[in-house]
Image (cartoon, rainbow, N blue to C red; front, side):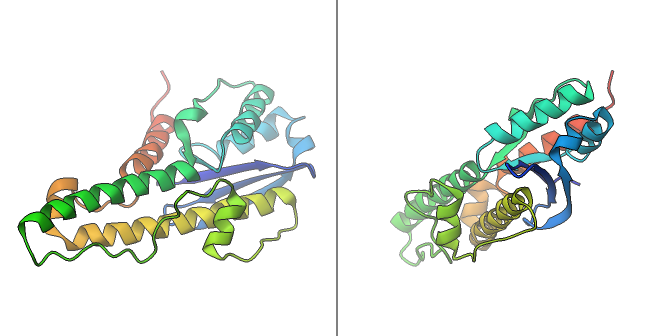
Length: 213
């Protein structure tokens, strides 16, 4: 099943790995002592195994990718193209914004020839300008501050929470698509996630599911 992995390494010496599904819900979680993991090839391989077949869910990918590459070096295994698996929350929001803009244009075309076409009414508008930091999006979404037993777990919880918020914005977008025949004719049937986002998850799953030559 397609899904995401969140990888967070914090200054308090903890390493968190979260599984997050296509609803933005956590389905599994591990927190380990980073020093122990990075000193043991078998432990590093165990962590990397948890990242297989999943898109890499992040706000900004640099830190997570560096952590994964270091794990691969410790484990002594070939590198993965993590950049191709990145699902960065600002990019996911931007994709939904582009899709909504396309719907708006198509509605305007329909309104130009028909008088009874209602304007689009989003349950929640996307932020303009987009939030520059996770904290800004947390504030916009009116989320209470998160706390967990470790800094890495707190960060992973935050990323999962923000993902769920973005997924909900897509659900609202897909509802609009499903209710208007002319939008479906132009853009296709509603999908679980925005097309590029969903494709990243599917590609990550397929890449690790394929037999190695």
